[in-house]
Length: 354
Picture 1 (cartoon, rainbow, N blue to C red):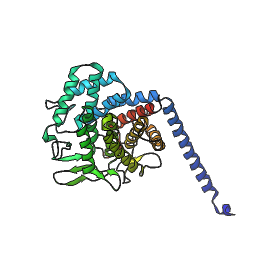
Picture 2: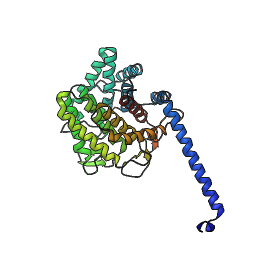
Picture 3: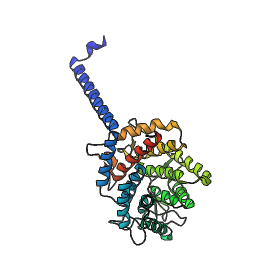
Picture 4: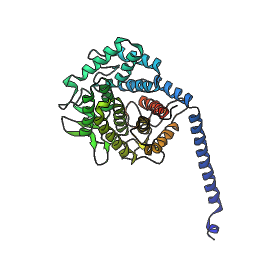
């Protein structure tokens, strides 16, 4: 009779704890169901919170991309107008405070090109061409032609790929877009873990940040996903190659997915659980599935990431648990986390013909 040796008080305490735990799970499940059932309202709250955030050049760019994915042409044109209004003479978009960013301003370019398509206003086309010409300056690149992160040192960051490769492909410069992808793999790709390191110093030939930062891996996955869908049919061999790269990266990340659907901020290190990598990967997975080049075996993992993201939305529409702006070294909020939630949802809707 094992039970006679157990203190009845302890049984009561354990029972109460279990009831509380089940109660919390039920409440969280109910909140998640409410957010999913009122998805349109949730999307608007998340978008409004994104538009209210102060933004650097890359944040303006990824917010623009979210509006592109959503088909929100009114807000897109308004944001593109501001990006052009704050374009420097050398062609870089949205430089409000610092003037040393090289790669980041390019993230605005797909949104600016879409604004040209929507309005027909030549100023957007001219502005995009000016940004493109800026990247043709040898000072913006390594000796092998990989676009640098900033003017302070000869660095290639994982972030860069999202900022420049889709834009170069949209401008019809497919060779250069692919060059940037290959540059990422040469400088940052770990072929053993199938993950991307964060910062390579090309002049010193060392990693200045050798960690597998989740956000950087997400930027790369999303960028290559977009490039795959931009490349024309005559570049089918390149499409297949990049699809292989995307799959490798997604598979590498999925090995580290936590039971709740999220990932650590530094993927291989148990620092803090972070929200946005899951959204970035879910965007890539849903987009690849909707486009027919990624199979259904990835959907379960993506759905788990998506559900986890919904649990992080607070009553103000801000998504918590992001690698937090402006220093990205702790959990908090960021424009890119807001944007990728919207991009993930748009991809999900396209996949399900909603």
